[in-house]
Image (cartoon, rainbow, N blue to C red; front, side, top):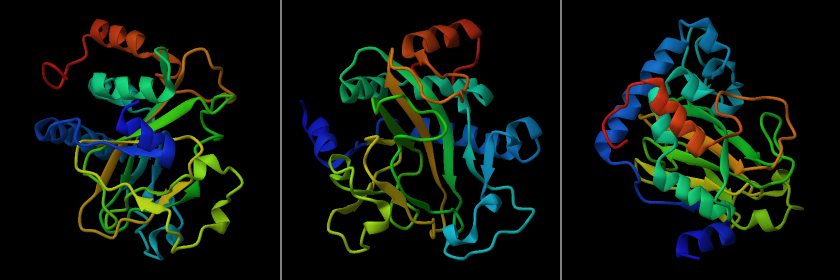
Amino acid sequence: MHDGIERYEADGFLVTGPVFPPQDIETIIRSVDALCERAARDSAMAEHCVFERDQPKEKRGGAEVREDDMSVFILGDLPRFCPELLPVILNAQLAGLVSELLGASGIVTHFANLTAKTAGIGSGISWHRDFPNKFISPVTPEMVRTMICLDGMSPENGATTFLRGSHKTPGIQASSIAENDADIAAAVCAPGGIVAIHPLVLHGGPPNTSSRPRRNIVIQWGRKGVPLATDNSESITGKTVEDLRAEFHGSGAPTMRDGF
């Protein structure tokens, strides 16, 4: 077990250095920004979105958002609307990390979304655990969520914050977390880094008070063969990495660049 896996087991999360180089991150950001602009005028896409204006102002520290503001907070089923992002989600280094974290060679994808905290107004996220959840959840906590951090994360732009070790103490509730708890840690990372999240660790995050956006591609993975307890699905739900790679190469969808 290498150091990163040991940290994941001890703390309930793992932060890596950049996996994607700057030129790739720039290309990915252009694609997700174009998607967000499209969602503002495409009703079919909008059905898969949560917009910042739909969030209560308390999640923004009381900041108001104009009724005509179409800033995207969550854009679901990312590969459905932008197939060229699929090789990013299926990055070999990322998939290898997930296999190691789950202790399984057979892994499947559950969903992939863009979670964006708009500069200055991006909503915070309350303390919670990812398992169980009401969207797509396996019957047992044999899952992991990963975030590809396109802009990097800092406390100012709303970095995801964890209560270290809380995955080992399921009796701890969000309401009992003190602001000055010594085990609270922000997942600070550079652009292109990955954050892996244990399904039982308590985590959340403040609003984005900075002058720059915080955009993450969030992917939930599970062990192959573990059934889902929920009925929802996305275009990639239940598919293996190998299946999705074969679909992509057979689709004729454009790639961002060779080797992605």
